[in-house]
Amino acid sequence: MNRQRFHDITAIYSRLRVAIVGDFCLDRYLEIDPARSETSLETGLPVHNVVNLRSQPGAAGTILNNLVALGIGEVFPVGFCGDDGEGFELRRALQSKAGVKLDHFLQTAERRTFTYCKPLVLAHGQPPVELNRLDSKNWTPTPANVQDKLIHSIRALAENADAIILMDQVDVAETGVVTAKLLSAVAEIAAQRPGLLIIADSRRGLKGYPAVTFKMNAAELSALTGAAAKLTVEEIELLARSVARRHGRSVFITLAERGLLGATAAGQVAHMPALPVRGEIDIVGAGDSVTANLTASLAAGASLRESLELAAIASSVVIHQLGTTGVATVADIGTFV
Image (cartoon, rainbow, N blue to C red; front, top):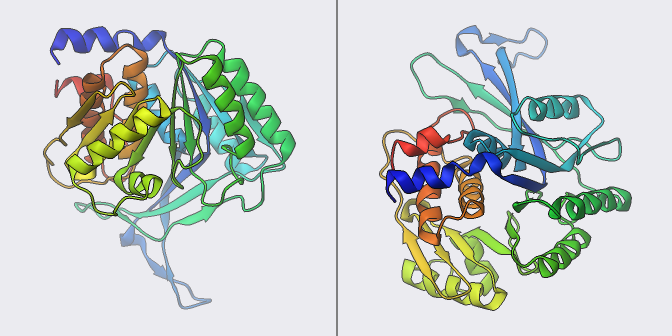
């Protein structure tokens, strides 16, 4: 891709409207200064003194952070948070992002706010060290009335959106935003608007998902197709081509150090190698940066290979940001084009 083509694609970003339907969580970082460690007089256990606390949207919110960093014109989160302190923090973090519209983000006492609490030891001159996480999740089915409100929002946004992202982050089916009932509604939307880009990603795999664009890793592709756990790039290419042809939509596979691969329903396939590592890395958030950049570039008219190139660069930028779930701006990506 030359510089002019890069400019032509990214110049459209400010005019895009993207909806993100999924599990938004609060990433809460507790920054610990090991120089201020103590021992509790009451228990005799070590005390970690937190000297700074910072919060940012996580899970589906990480995709949102990347879309905002790219300068997408309007981003509509479709999800929920609890009527609790973490929910207040999450909404405040979302509201602070340029272009984010909370018209379809539900706050409800029937759910708790999905939270990843990440203690982080920050010693001078050393990389951050993350201690055991403290997670808060929902373990009961999402109430029917909450599901109905989310489905109503998706239908309304699909009328004018340039793209919709589905992000399923929960461990237990039916406890989050992307439920079977919601997927049924998405299937209807996809059938009614075949030209609308709908891209789906799920940590529990995409089996049973409607005919939308799939984004997954190699292990998830193996699970979906029943193939062997360890596959060559050539074998992954054949499987991706088959899934894309069967679903009638493109498929994108993240391959870690082997890069990214995409296949279209028409049989086109492209493989983009990963960029060289430039020092220490932290892979958290890399997959979400890929989802955001694939969505933005495809919605802006990029080809299969162009979208893979931009996503590969973005993920390389993100993994070199330590101690946070990073993002890549258009300027960051442009450095490598």
